[in-house]
Image: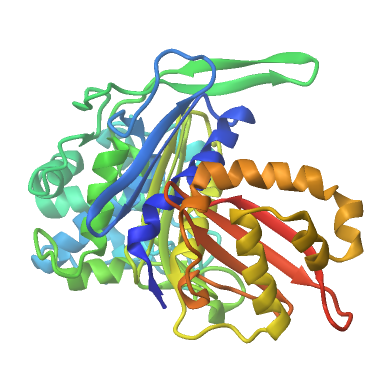
Length: 469
């Protein structure tokens, strides 16, 4: 399936609405997003609620938490390609592990740890507080031994400690600290100046302060500022600060098959290949690669992603492998679930720009109803509307009120100034011959319309939904 990349900009109102809701729902004081394709940044914005101390932008740095893991994975593959480590190396080649319990007599390899298949237990709350641990303390921690929940190589278990161990392997194989290696061999050669492992990152619009929300219920909610942790042994799991604009450049490089700088396209494809299936159904295509999650959309195909949550911050990066359409999002609240908004935004963009190879199989009345809706968008005719809709529509919401609310959306998207596009060019989708969703592009935006017809003969429209794209 191809996509109308030139229509990507017309989805801005819909994406903005998704992130505005985050502020309205007090999910985070600040919310930022940046939409891109392979040509670069298309649009982005920063939104603010309380405390309203300034306003973020795509050039404001946030902690990206576990989105850092893609950088750690790329660094490991860089050393692998240089022959300085192997993904099949057991981790004790680089750091001594004392008394591993539950590992079935086997220690995980570098590759198993990179793919969340090392047998270590999930550890988010604990690991996220360990970033500043010294290397000496980390080596002592490892020497005391770790508990395993399964034998390495036997199943998915998200482990931050696993990536901290990979970071230690990177440092030993490179002969210099992990942070220095990533900075010198990845960030600087790629020109990613607004990404760094410290709060002094040179972001044009400053660095966001992270917050944790307290109270609620009978107590008034309050946002409490969180201190920054400094780089240390656990920085490989989530230590980076980045601006949305700079993270877009990183993700575009990851997905660019023609860019052979620093790390080969073949090695970057390994990052986005499932090495450990996620969930009980191994056939659904979802899994963990190296520092990236691989998801299979039934309609759109492969999506690559990663979430990040840290004390005071949330982040998410996500892009569609085939088209290159993607989004990065950053917020400054503890474990705020930024993924939910980013996932909804990318789905909206893909749905509204999709170009299927063939038109959906519809009733003739469904096709005719779509044409009538397009006429009503440009000029609401009560008589035409009355002939289109089943009797429940007026009862569910008076047509006069419906016409007024749709009229506001039509004006916002500039629909009246454009002609309807052919159905195949309207990103159509259906789940039955009586159902249709399509995009109506305008001069300043787009509308996403949906109709469902009744089972009577001849059928009438029983539901009409119109929203900004």
